[in-house]
Length: 82
Image (cartoon, rainbow, N blue to C red; front, side, top):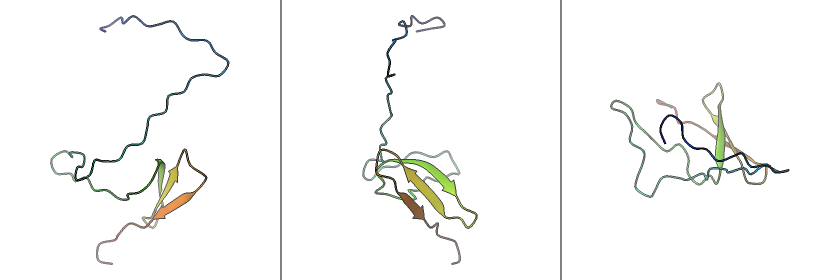
């Protein structure tokens, strides 16, 4: 701890160890707390490993999932007044 923490020596291996953070959803009935004036809303549920989002010009989102067979999910954003 502090400005000069004691670090272990680097581990040498032919195949590096990779620690991947698990994708965790919100607990049932809970959601993240937003800053005053902002709102948090779940855009989609039931995705196993969402990792990347791409917003298309028409407002739709492409969601890429990792750790699963190759697939692509398209989410259509609801539009006010539509």
